[in-house]
Amino acid sequence: MDRKVGHEMSEMEILVGELKAAHADGKGAIELALLARDKLGSGFRAVPFIASFRLAFGIPLPVLQRAQAWERFGLGSVHISDEEFTSLLSPWLTHE
Image 1 (cartoon, one colour):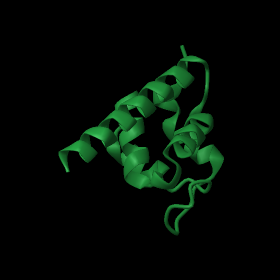
Image 2: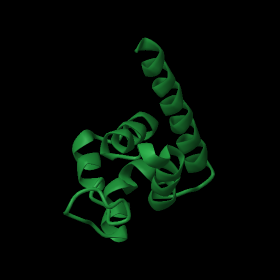
Image 3: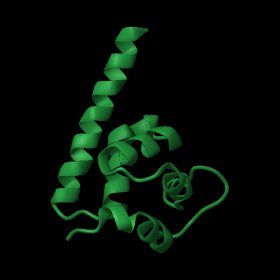
């Protein structure tokens, strides 16, 4: 059991590193979210999405809970648009 937890942590650490690198290369909220979804594959769910963006960018939990309703994720019955998703995350993802 401990071995599995350690394995998941290393996968999360890798994802967080990839998200940070992609952000440094100028990727925006939508591109970063799609990267996370692609990397997590069948493991993509609300909790891993929230955890990866919180660890990578320090985005507050309430913001990420709203962002998980993004229409491209298909998680749950309430959906938000690309524009709302980008707007929600932009304070933490804006390049200076």
